Image (cartoon, rainbow, N blue to C red; front, side):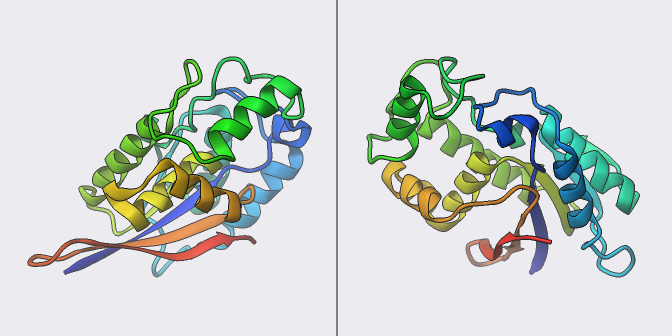
Length: 213
């Protein structure tokens, strides 16, 4: 039996976060966001029990967050598309969240009960995101490191944790319910454990949620 610790870190605040603009892959950290990332970095042990690697989404905001943490801890960074944020519908990217058309789309896909296969346009829908979360957990299970920092995004992180809890039985309605009532702040951590068991089902646990410096 072997157990790993995975420290999921949401990126620090971005300029577009502060302006409530829906983002794509672009978007740099604010000065506040950089300070948030550094404060989170300083919480990790640097000797006994220190993380062994940082794996990050390749988006600008996660790269900047990972680089701040990596510099503080002296760790190398690898990048994985598995950790990217959900691809939003093109109609909302770059638009203020309060715009009527944007709000209608986001309310439908994020804040209401709907079929698992609902698709508005060219977004990554629930089924797509659930499959990517499943692939990420398999990716983690096959890595040799015992303590891993993963820098990712709010919506996708909620999907990863939801899939840990429900597995293949997770529905869009259950995910939206969990997502709505469990916010994740910029630069906060969700700490999870993964235990490989030789003769039983492997075990995932959520140990800490939305832990802020």
